[in-house]
Image 1: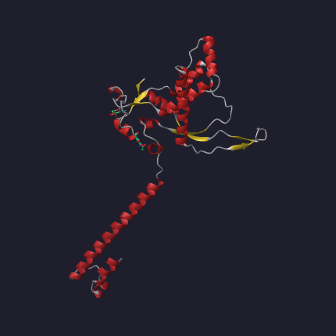
Image 2: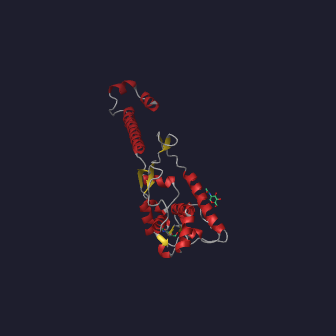
Image 3: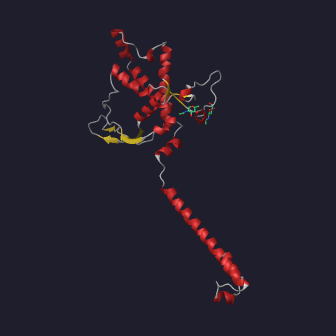
Length: 263
Ligand SMILES: *[C@@H]1O[C@H](CO)[C@@H](O)[C@H](O)[C@H]1NC(C)=O
Ligand SMILES: *[C@@H]1O[C@H](CO)[C@@H](O)[C@H](O)[C@H]1NC(C)=O
């Protein structure tokens, strides 16, 4: 506004009031030029302002996609491309039946193993560095995949290891049962019970510790509710049907099968 008024005050008063935009005298030429210049300037300013405002509104309305959020909230994985989310309620009851529950059988052991028994995949050197693993421990080297799989560092999938650990605890909780079957029918003991007893103990303790650290790391703060129920021993009970946002596990199993470099 300041520039505006000083430019106008430079002009001859009477002339500018009568015919402000006609050329003729030097003053009028100056007046025409400068006012066109000022209008262009203001027009540009306003245009820029409007464009910025529109961009701001568009940016505010843009909801980031799940694919955009995953790499921000989670450590890198080449399997990001296969991550898909869905919402669900978990099973409700304490004793909710499941093919994964109950006394072990060969079939049960097999479906458990199918949840976690996957090979290693190829990761690029750059991404290995992003995962803060540039140099191997002294006296060791990284294992690499074959050239035909990329020739990068080989890596297992953490989530599968966690399920493996749950499986180890499941088997440990049925150790007597396995032992009985072994003694009576000569069935093989699960691999966790092979080797000296102190190693069996370390394996089980390792799994408990990894699951603890991982659960605390992910620190799931999702609320679940309490039902008042007069027939329950305490008069109320937990409703385990917590609402969760989950990853499609089958898709990730398939992705891993498709990218297995070391079986
Ligand atoms: C990266 O790895 C090094 C060596 O293992 C460790 O000392 C350091 O704390 C790690 N950095 C982060 C951010 O985790
Ligand atoms: C496998 O590793 C190599 C070497 O680091 C890398 O160049 C390549 O991109 C990786 N392939 C995949 C699919 O990650």
